[in-house]
Image 1 (cartoon, one colour):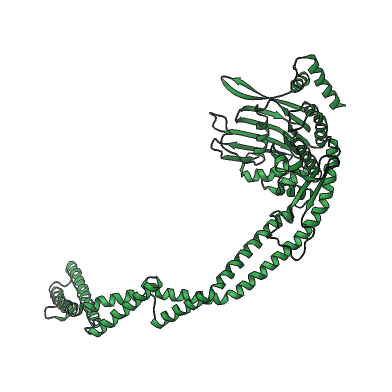
Image 2 (spheres, rainbow, N blue to C red):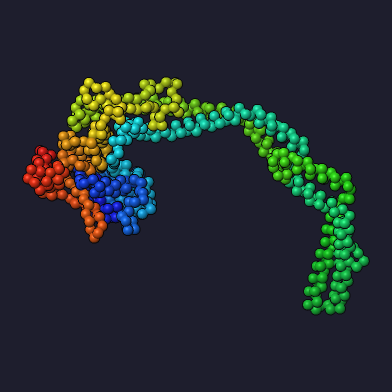
Length: 563
């Protein structure tokens, strides 16, 4: 049960603090005064999406806090949903801070949590019915969701959606692979030709780079050979070679200044230079040996480079990557050969998934049909209480049975169907879809009847209704009020209403009104007792709130509700 609600700087609600009790609580006031803001604060605490424009102009943020009282069963249920909740807790505080850009932060018992956590908890704390709920009732998907909720098929519905997505994915992969295999013959022939060509050319990874370096060496010819030979002579092999000169000088210094530390270091360095010179001379000799002055050998290199570059242009790869390209072509050929096995595995998986969905569809259809009859009976009983005694609701579900030809991909995303609510609002009339025959007031009453049925099978401690009496006249108002009061027995119901006949049945009554304060408009929320409540009901009746006749009628409504 929501025991306390605190709102700061939510649009026109600069400051509001409400305390709620069990039973039926109503909020009344003129249209646009901010009644829905109070309910909006509750929905935000239950994880509803925030948006821009919610924060009061000039404020840094809007703050919403709600204190919920828990019984042992609900606490245990919530603890399963969130590790932050202790199963022994008997109180829960939710907090939401909304910023002007629409972003928000969520808190649970003072600890930061996600908005998703609030939404998950909110499903167990309350059921919220907004002003557009009766319009959603015309939607086939929404009708199926309500029927499944009454039948206890929420888990089966989630399983259906998961397996149906798996079937869609597998089916798409099968179609894609079949399409690929249809074109496989031409692709396979082309790959074979490419592989044969590349194998015949004997391509190697990085070959073009190696040949270019070799070509550069060979194309220098005699000039490069003369330079390398001259460098070798200068370093070690000539009459005045640097290595020989360094060796002589080192011997002389060693003989004349033996034991001199500084000279010994110089001699060691000269020995090192001599060694380096002779090593360099050998490297020059090795390079000289690699140089071929054979014009025919150079021509062979150039022809090979031309071939590699031609192949690279044809296959649209870098000449150095021809080896890798050959490996890729060979791998694709091997994969094409495995396509038949892959398709067979996918088609087996698809058939198994389709069979599982077919079995699940049979179970859902049977439970939906059984629940449809029971739901229709409950709704008709409640509609009788709401002055629609002749109304008959029927719920149709297609197909009538699930056979081997059942195609889960052609079925609605929410399961076998469609599900359709049909209403015969008056005796002797044929039943038609709700959107074709029901007025706004009739749809509102059908919705309330369905919510009453759901409340019996899905107990939540708080039901919130935003103008459930939309389109309902005063004659039906008393019946609606009695029904809401009965629905509130054993739980909490908070409702926004414009009907005094409904408001009279409330255990608690709050008035929402707009005022100007310090040059700004603010919404005020105040609890009404005794005479103040009589005056509000009189004003809602449309008469002079201070007149004796209106006040007498208001008191009569209260007396009738208490009887």
